[in-house]
Length: 345
View 1: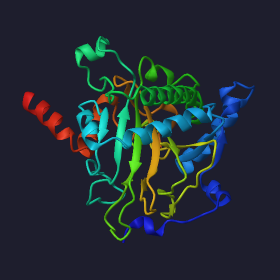
View 2: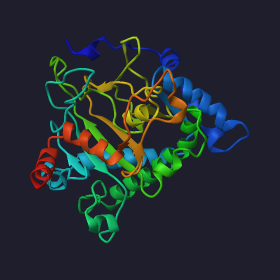
View 3: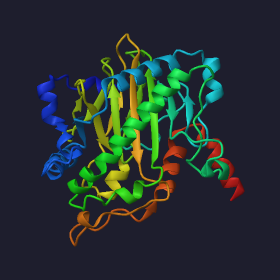
């Protein structure tokens, strides 16, 4: 039986007892005591569930609405127009239905590829950008369809708005881990590794117990900031093992911590399993903003998260190596690039 069939359907009041709504406004506005007050709420949510609703983020509703309109515009294009933009070695571009799956998930052994299509963008880089010229991994250019300038503008505007939110969250997350507020900032300087994923989940066969819109998984990001529309489908696994369908709360983003935060915090903060099953008759759209450090960043367990009774569970690692390992494991198109590197090596 599909594991999401057991997920709890709850009211907003019930859901927010599990996944709290946290107003980041006092911290973002630098009100006296605001940073540590918000950090305390984030600490509780991060240790208990690994998810929270982000309120007080300052992103205008029109920016979010325009991003969803742009996503619908892109996904409505003929497949023949989207395939030339197929996901490249930097994981930028178009990913058709059934081209990814959670191969190494410890949550649920997926037997079928994910039933969604996605369009990934990152930082806008010109052809003469030094990293583009050098062919630096994870530093490529965005791919855009011809004749859709308004769509491109809306997507880039949303990207920049969420990039600002992620940057402002860094001090809160550092204080939540009992570290100085500026701890994370150096790891995100320059161009942090950021992917914005415009997802489209077509309606799927509700009687197919092995098909997921997105199989149960944990994210490989530092944090993920998710915008959703009113078609349900997302399920979050609570520490009890139950699956919760978090309701849409207008004016908020749903934030979850990823495996990089779990690693940095030495398992103190949770990277919580979640997935998608679109068993409605309607198309479902969501926008996932994956915010992670600069690829050159060296990740090691923070001093506040280790001690005599809590030795580091993870060795020091370069973020670029971690993310490429994840891509190679979960995206079918990566076989071409990982195979060519192995042959060259």
